[in-house]
Amino acid sequence: MKRMGIGILTAGFILQGAAMDVSANGGGTHHDHSDKKIINVSHRGASGYAPEHTIPAYQLGEQLKGDYIEIDLQMTKDGQLIAMHDESVDRTTDGSGQVKELTLAEVKQLDAGSWFNEKYPQYAKIEYEGLKVPTLEEVLQKFGKQANYYIETKSPDVYPGMEAKLLDVLEDYKMIDKKGRTKNVLIQSFSQESLLTVHSLNANLPLVQLISYQSPAVITDEELEMIAQYAIGVGPNFARIDEQYVQTVRNHDLQIHPYTVNTKEEMRRALDWGVTGLFTNFPDLFHEVIKEFKKR
Image (cartoon, rainbow, N blue to C red; front, side):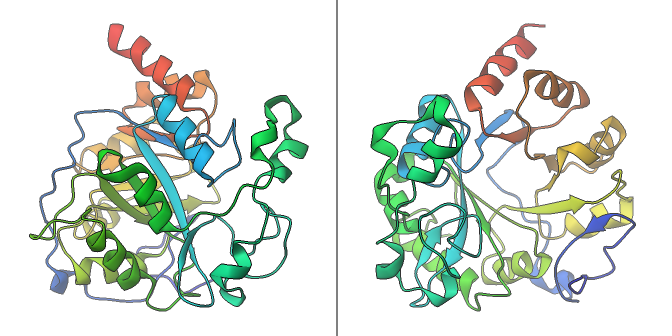
């Protein structure tokens, strides 16, 4: 088990990170991201219908009414941020090896789509064959400032400097304004240390603390007060939470975006509990559920 951060550790509650003093980083920042709208996050793109973390998956996520494109970040041997969930390329390409040991040129030689056709023949398309792994910059170039991005620093302990590199790219593509604020980017991580690093670099950016529970979820007021010093919300695994958990989070004026919710029944339950958004592989289904919910 990795080191745990600043006393935020209860039974079944996993937060990655090292001890740091968040009070010195200017917590309590106000952001433009309000919780008035229920947000529909396309998990790795519309990954139920297309190969995860590819341009077609992100495009489909937008077409199916997803509000945010979720981008998991890994960093290549030559320091380029790419969209990929795993630390290795094995599962979602025809290659093998750790991302950190491959150059961007080597990653670009891989087929990131054919595996999906083989695993999910009901959704297979010829155009998915030979898809390339996109860089963060390529995604921003493709979708521009009109899109919303929910970006995760994956395995930041493996990639020193990932946070600074991410902010540099966001600034280069005008996703962060001259005052250091953003209207269309949320940054998330399981690593508390990574989020605190981002917060120390720019205290104006909205952050979400991801949490993985191994047993039924419980979160204390003390834990939420600590998270609220640097983040605007939490992202727990849906399978372990309940209505009491959601209400406890909401009582602290924090947003809650559980992952990953793929059936209408679970989506309806999540909304009944009071979540402010969620991650789904099927954004079209959640869009329909939100419309039903608002009519009640």
